[in-house]
Image (cartoon, rainbow, N blue to C red; front, side):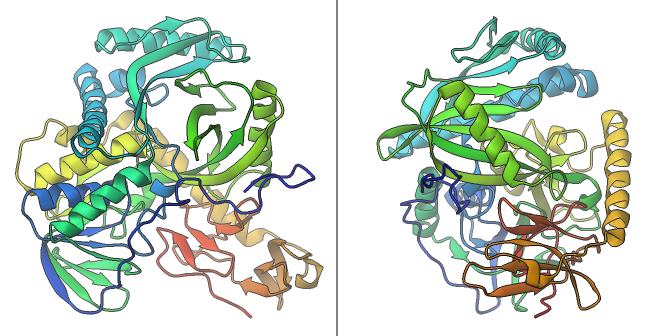
Length: 507
């Protein structure tokens, strides 16, 4: 997948990770069944939790709505690190020093788990230890990095304050975190899947969970029931809310990735700018050839400028830093962010002690997802875990949670009204081949996409979750909801929740 002769970006927004990976296929669930633990979601958390629990001798059923590792895990940048941007100074301020240290330890234990598992089973997943760096390009954020360095010192985190990084980027300062890592997540997780099968775990693909009955039985869209002592909601967005109203406590962000071929040698390390526009860098080996992943352009799902411009901005940054290059891959990712920027892991609500949730990883799903799986295992097996209170979904810190809660829900209300008032004069017949957008259709607002062969897809743009109007995502050819982050294919099928039903098809 390379640039065409005009130098434009690749047309298919598919991640590198899924290429040449021979993942096993699994049938959909056809009958009612039961297990000790029912896991919903076949990403890094669900698969790792299933692996850990079958090792404990428990009977496990894992349900995946589409195919394993086809969601956020398959679209990651695959850094395994406890350096999550400007994190620890904020955690000390809002949660205290002890919880800030626990956050670091939880993510480092996740990293250690990957390292130990790779070594124990000799998994060929391109695992390499790397130092991680955050850097500032403005004086304002340079001062914030200095405060973050002070937080590192207070928490005994190994890291150095630096005045440069090995790229042609003018920086004011940078902060390292030693002995972090990167890997190929699908190669790692495919090994865990094989172990789950060998240990008797049952996996069902194309099986959508829609509800939980009596606190212990998952109901699928096809009406099948899976009963378990525990239910683990490990889907990206919780498939079951448990009256916790997670859609009011999470917001969805999208970010963009391009993989480039460059003649310049990559100096090693993983890098992230802390001021805007955010830029992230790491290397990756593709068929023995080194490439660079450039990541950034984060924004709330369904909001902002033409999404294709985000890919073009990353391309421009790549030319500035690495000179002329070839773009081999491009893709985007969606992440959920909690009110206080710490994941929700544990009992979904106080009234459902056997239904556990893991969500809100804020772009750091490789470390946070595995930390979640380790905690979920301990809750199920009734082992003590020092991180249970830190990640408890029922926690609420007035500062910053209340302010964020109010701001998010005012934003939702504004977009709900804005979408209903939007007027367009564009008609279906005006669409060019390969073009999509909001159109005037049968006397009202609709969404249309015309394939290159001329086939037309027209949908009602009203999100099936809470009635907001979705917007066209030009870069990924999807319909995205600006209120709660649901995403739909151009023909209306659900790609990401909280929506459970697709958009209504009009033609």
